[in-house]
Image (cartoon, rainbow, N blue to C red; front, side, top):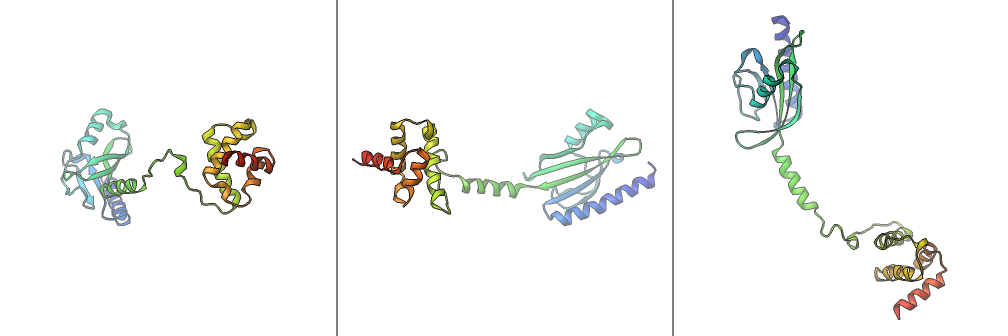
Length: 214
C-alpha cells in the first residue's frame, strides 16, 4: 500500500469515527492506531471516554494479541475494558491491513456502559418477584370466564401432576377441593366447565362439593 493510499484510508476512518460518535453520543469513543508509530500508535481519537490524546500507546491487550498472532490476528468484538477511573467499557478492535495482508493499524471502539450496568442492576432489583416458585402467587388477567377457570385448573393439575382423564374419584375430589379453596366456584358457570374437563356431570361436581363442604 502506497503512502497516499494509507493516508487516504486513515482520513476515511476519521470521518467514520466522527459519524459514529455523533450517532452514539458522549459514551462513545473511537480511536485510530497507526502501528508504524509504535509504541505511541494513537494518531486520532474521537470522543473522550478514556481521556487519551494522540501519541498514547496501544493497549496491552491488543499488543499481546499482535505479538502472539502477528498478521493473522483476528478482530476482537465486545470485550470488557476498564478506564483508570474505574469506568466499565465495552470495546471492539478491528485490525487494518494493507494490500499484502500486513497489519498496519487498528480501528477501536470504546463504549462506556457503566451507567447502563447500574441501571440494569436497579431494574433487576425492582423486577424481583417474591416466591417465584410458588404457583399461588401467580395472577392471570383473563378476558372471559373460561380463561379464569382454565388458569386455575391448569395450575391445580400441574401441582397434582396428573391429567383429569387419568384421575380416580378421590383424585378428582382433591382437584375440586383445591379449586374450591382458590375460589373457583364463586364464579357462575364454573361447575359446568369443571365438569366438562373432569369428564363427569355437573351433578357429580355438586356432590363432590357437598362432600368437601360437609
